[in-house]
Image 1 (cartoon, one colour):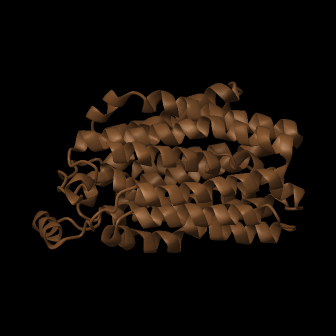
Image 2 (cartoon, rainbow, N blue to C red):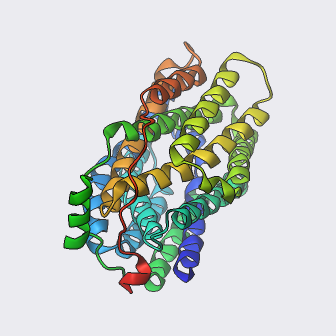
Length: 380
């Protein structure tokens, strides 16, 4: 439990820094002279460069543990943020966002794998994942509005530089504090996987993170374009915080972990698609719809993490890495697609269609029982 608390603390700081950038990236790019189509590519390239990082992260985390990858990812991202404060052109921002996407690709597989190995009990693992979601969402509740306030008060360069220094300090603290865990892939674990016939999960289980990331990419592209100037930055930050408040509500309902992860996942995706449809087809208050959309995220993400823990066996690092890969692809396609259709078709309706198509192909059959993997407590 002590390890989980330390990890939650570092994750809160890291996620605060990362989410604080959301309402300012699009205005910052515009201030550098970027066109809407270029902004779509700028946001998408971050996710595209996740791919090589994810491919390296999975086997590395399984064989060497999570601590060094958490430290490297946070510190390198901090250096890039500091450099981002001194750029002069949209192309420089594009390059730095590409590097940022690569180094941060190691963070999610490493953190999720460390949390999953803290216990062998599926319900307890689900609670750890919900705790991860609560920390992530709590940071994202206040960070967009806080980031928007800071940039409106002190400017882009001071904000990026300060956030970068905080990330570097957090990475160093994580390396000094988190335990060094034993590699998870052992002969016994691989033998258990062989006996149960378990390798990499069915590719259809990776459709939900793909379509969800694509829909979120569309949302992250579209919301900041609803206005201009510092007032728009503030309102965008508040809208992102509203989404996070909705997610925090359902993440706090820990009793949901007792229900089937695939059932929670399917229901959550359907309700998320419905929210996007209402945003595209009605004039309902945007704040209310975004809050409801946030509640679906609070159902979806712990369920998805529990599902991949069950399916991953001894290869949790590789499984979470594959999840991050398809998430990166979806996050790349989403804003690029929104940028191309901007002014012609409602991106929110496109997000609705993407989610429903992904839901239609998600397998609903009974999933295998989990295989025990070495936990951090056993590895100590």
